Image (cartoon, rainbow, N blue to C red; front, top):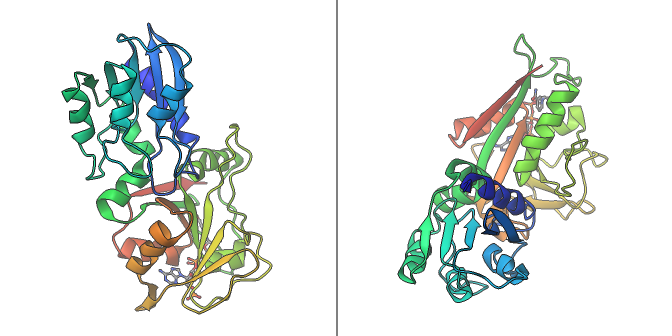
Length: 313
Ligand SMILES: NC(=O)c1ccc[n+]([C@@H]2O[C@H](COP(=O)([O-])OP(=O)(O)OC[C@H]3O[C@@H](n4cnc5c(N)ncnc54)[C@H](OP(=O)(O)O)[C@@H]3O)[C@@H](O)[C@H]2O)c1
């Protein structure tokens, strides 16, 4: 049996929850009988059934002891907004469970696996562990570092330039590179972040566009703007944008404006994470920092960069 193949399907299903699950994990699940998927499910957001429960609910056939359940994250064993998934699996009669990774949440972390095993269920894993961890890099970062996963993305010319010196826009990347970064970077982060000077010079939209998937996911947009000097006609201002400023202000149209104190001219990271990962109605677990230089430097000098992507144009 090709366990990775079925785990890849779980990952595909899990991705449908991006933008809906808040600070919870992305999870997909399938039930396999004799090499064929007979039921699928995924986690669709806060308050809805978890992926395994969704899959069991969607299964139109009687479950057999020879069926195998695949799920990219260890099933939970605690009661949160919904009952434990381990109970639903045990009650369903499933006897074989394949998991992608252990849940880093201390309320689960191995105890979900132990609960299944003590009910006589065979648990195998990690299956495709690296891919499963990559899918939930934001959730893992939040649980283990109490901050979002940070990716820095920079485009530079062969000579190393990232911007024009006269304050005009410099286009560096090709259409193919742009398509790649929309498909693989913007689509895999909850939010994109830039400094206010980049808004001033480039007036970007910061959306996902021109890609070959039917996903409707669009990341949130975060602007660092301590003096609240953003151009009120900037293209990216809408109900998916959050301006982080040191000033007190009402929203700008549909755009949220959040006040975060400065420490030595930089936003207080702890206050920022408190807002972005918990207080915010749409909590954020991963951020793609697209620049410019001053903004990259702020993240680098704070030592909070998990990954860096450089596109040479
Ligand atoms: N090649 C690329 O990949 C790329 C990507 C993006 C942008 N760019 C280019 O980069 C240039 C702009 O870069 P830049 O370095 O001048 O400006 P920037 O990084 O876009 O914006 C810098 C400003 O953002 C605010 N800011 C950033 N980090 C902050 C923090 N931690 N705390 C508080 N405020 C913070 C400050 O605003 P105040 O000034 O109001 O204090 C700061 O001066 C543009 O030409 C743009 O085209 C290139």
